[in-house]
Length: 206
Image (cartoon, rainbow, N blue to C red):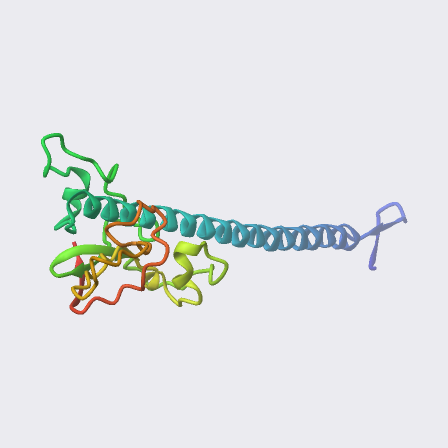
């Protein structure tokens, strides 16, 4: 530390000591800000992960609403809908039926840009247009067991595939109706149905 003589014969210390203290304070503040930034980034990552999980739950709910609506439409007239509008307002009867409350948007994309699955030119189901990788890969409810291990949201297909009527079944030997058959009780979970593999599969945006 340097010293300088005063007119009265004393010595005056330089400002080096004060400058050093201010430098230590600034360094401490910088370290504190850096730690705070790291903590905030971690909190944002946790929030983003939780938000994505909630979006996946919404996709499961909304997709299932469409699937159940298609099933109900088919049960009411033994034909699949030609459009989503027919699920909203089924005018085949004197008093219109409303199988779907509203045209839900895709929770993943935030838009009504679903990709529709067609069976014989009519809508049998849909799936998200997103190719993002889902967080959830296992432990799905029974009606979504085909989603196990899927790599994208687009692979989560929500559909109702009408059963194929067998012409060689004997009327004298009635059998217990299997889940999903026209004679079976209404099952909103659609358990027992096969994966969507129609003979003439088509998919497009509606």
